[in-house]
Amino acid sequence: MADDETGAEGATIVSTAVMCQLLMLSRQRIDQLVRDGYMKRHAPGQFSLVDGVQGYIRFLRDETRRQNISAADSRVRDARAKDIEVRTLQRLGRLVPLDVYEEMIESVAGVVRSEFAGLAATCSRDLTLRRIIEREVNVRLRRIAEHAMAQAIRLETVRGADDAVRAVGAGPMGGGEQDLSANGSGAGSA
Image (cartoon, rainbow, N blue to C red; front, top):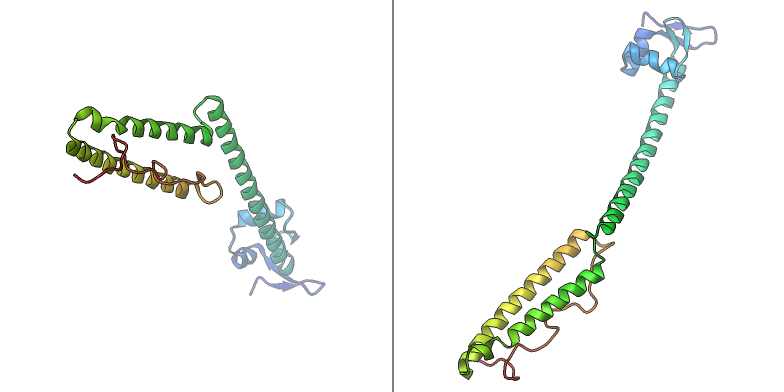
C-alpha cells in the first residue's frame, strides 16, 4: 500500500481513503465515527490501522446493543398499547368477559332446543309424522352443535395455547341428552 506508513510506536498508519476501503465506509461515515468518538485520527487524513478497526468494532457492538434494547422497548410498548386497547374496549362495553359470553351462548342454545322440542307435537297428531319431524329437527340440531364445536376449536387455535378458551366439560349441544321427542320417548324411526 502506497498510503501506508509505520508510526513511531510501530503502529501502521493509513490514509482516510485506505480506512474507507478497508471498512467499506464512505469518508462521511468515517468523519461521523470520529465525531462520535469511536475513532481517532493519528494526524489530519491519517489513522492508526489498529485503532481505526477497533473503533469501528466498538461502534458495531454498541449499535447491536442499542438495537436489542430498542426491540425490547418496542415489545413493551406494543404490550402496553394492547392492554390499553383492551381496557378501553371493556370500558366502552364492547368487550365482554368470556364467562358472561359463554353463559349467553348456553342460554340461547337451551332456548332453541326447548322451542324445537315441541315442534313435532304442534305440527301433527300423527305419530309417524311426528317422529319424522323429530328426526329432522334432531339432524339439524346435531349440525348446529357440530358447527358450534368447529367454531370453538377455531377460536382455541386462533387464541393460542396461553389464553385458549376451554369450557369445562364442553361437549355437543344438549350435553348428552337423547334426541328430542315430543311424547317423552326417544326419537324413533318412521
